[in-house]
Length: 92
Image (cartoon, rainbow, N blue to C red; front, side, top):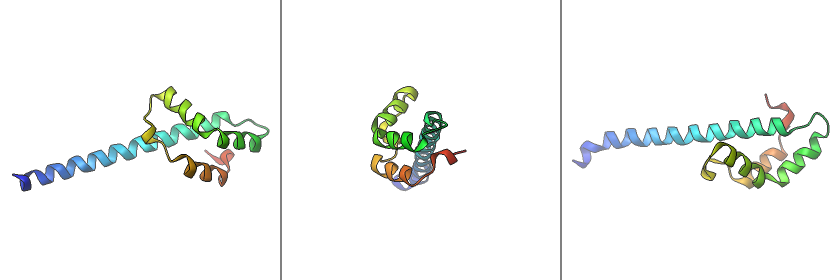
């Protein structure tokens, strides 16, 4: 009976992995949208530094607004490094 359930369990595992990746993609799209809305026309470097400094609050705002799980968000330190190396104004 254990061998018979293996294909079904494999399919469930694949579905769970896909759902996890989709949730992470959704969160990244919401972060990008939120970043774009927060960036002013002038003083982008100053605002970028402010966002990086207050990233936990920035993430919390998105979590509350969209009722998301903290586990779906990227690691804060890793995302800070990413933002420091990225030109936010180049986001589509």
